[in-house]
Image (cartoon, rainbow, N blue to C red; front, side):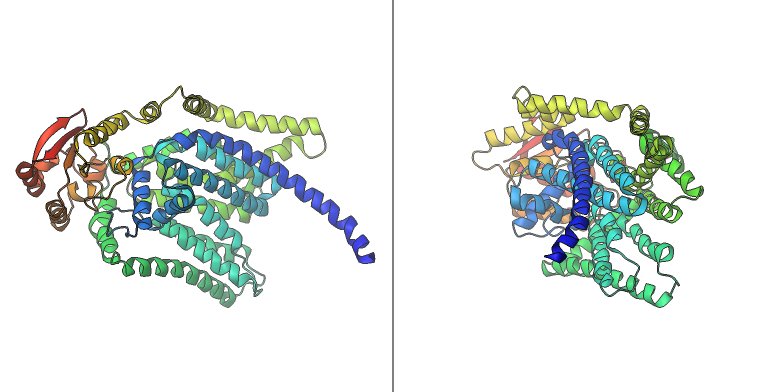
Length: 534
């Protein structure tokens, strides 16, 4: 009894303080997640469609690369499978997973931001990440590989403790595992490995000793390599490891080395222009992040700021290293900039409001919020438009076709192809698409005729002849009832040439001859010519 009464006065205030803190954190994060509700009805972008098809392939007993040709890392298909297992194979399942991942990433960013810069800075960092991702990712960025990097990378840094205590070894190993998972989702995540030796140098035990630090880094490397080994064994067991290596060797390597730029513009100028555009479009993150660097130079949180700045540099190198500058690549910059911006805003509030006068403190909060909104006016206009459409869809005033049409007119053309096939197939709706429109396969929900769900691996300038022969052999062995040939899709950054899919048939005599011998044109719209088997 005496022990209980002695502990209670000390325990209850800590419990109340814990509840107050996390009530505020959870409330702030829930408000941010409300911005993401309209994303539940956003249709799948081309990359996301392929990820979903990869997950469907895995859940049906197949293997990526062997049964579905794609260039992405294997982990992303399992991420999508995580959404489908409990919720079913629906687009909404992917969007719910994306929201859940955003919430968990915000929590991890808060915990690391709290450790590095303080509780309030951590809240700002988590909220800034959520707001930036949910309002700026766009149709093509939601559910991308970059969308799933923040959580494992930040959690890895949280778990890595540069201490000689035996209990720390498990966290160090898990830190390597998490970085391995990030690498399995996006190969450019390898640059985040630099964070672990940086933690040893900046936050290691005093006096610095090389042997314990090297042992911890070796344990983390063991966790990282364990993940790679698991994926290698999985692919090898399904006979897909060779296909994966061939895709990386024969397609990804020459694709990455293709330094494409718009006509009349050098690649270096293009890279500089796109980087500048990212900075100007994200001033609400970049300006306070730069301010955080000046605060650190003045003597506040130098080591912590240097670590996060290293993460930002790793993200930037990852974007530049891919040889392309798609908008969603820049999502990898969001979480390190959110840390720095959260720290800078926290310092502004401390400087302006202090901790003593409530009115002055809340005035400082208001000024910080106004600063963010003024730097990025579209931060509020985007959610407004999305909610207006979302409520229209929820109340039945907006149809599914209207919803898809908001994101691109090609969705209606894709739907027309599927509708024609279903209406004229006489029970056989098997379809092959020559072009880059895999969403039709997702809607059709039927076995694939060939593993080549889009044409880039066959129509690129560096496409090997063996893959082209493989497709023709697939179509001859199991001829689909319909073949849809796309036009109007000039994508020199993907193919290395400016021809459309239908124009490229002239360079593909095997497929062109097969169409001429076994098929006849039956229907067309503004995007496709549909051929029916004779």
